[in-house]
Amino acid sequence: MDIGGAYTADRAAALSGVPKSTVHYWARNHHLSPSVSAKPRLWSFTDLLALRTIYWLRQPKAAFDREVPATSMPKVKHALGRLRELDLDLFEDGHPVVGVTLDGDVVFNVEGMPLQTAGGQFLPSKIVDILGPFEGLEGIQGPDLRSPRPTLRIIPRKISGAPHIAGTRLPTLSIYSLSERGYTVAELSKIYPYTSSASLEESIELEKQLRDNIRLRAA
Image (cartoon, rainbow, N blue to C red; front, side, top):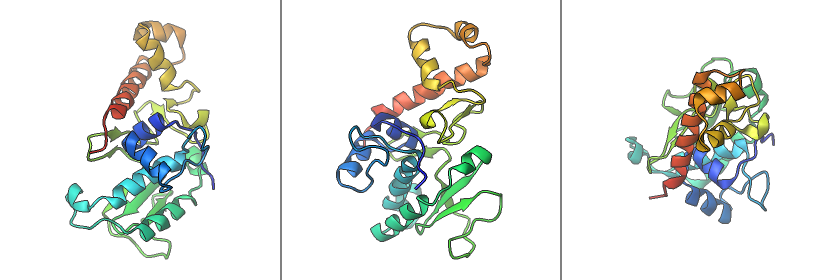
């Protein structure tokens, strides 16, 4: 399995949009064990997608204004199996789509072609893009896992999957840490002259969003 990334529980929860308590609960009960390491617990990029997938499938869709019951666990396991087939090269070569249908199928669309199931059947249009912005019932807002902001990127095999400024190896968390120590965007621009003010501001904004996500708990 091509997994990419390495995230603590805080980062996995904040990026996926799934409450931290739920992430730990699923790990303890073996619904989704962290793929990178059990001690300490470290989740992979593929795990982030799996967390969103389980969350979406196991909720009664009436909660999302869809009259569809919660997906059965066998279908959830099938969906997780499909995620293990995800080729992370796609994130380095393009802008892939990974979708989950109301019936629990995971579909990949890497060339702009119509989404299809594994059996070649065309899907109905109502799918959830689990790479896109993801908001749970608790109000947690997980960012787009390809481009969390216009100037930011997440590439699973780059900097352990950390959000960073596009075209650099500068993680957004490093910028945010300096801003918390009192550095202004103007001062940060002098430290990192190869970045734009917009990318620095977006880095700080993203990390504030991720910090807020950690504070929200499962209902």
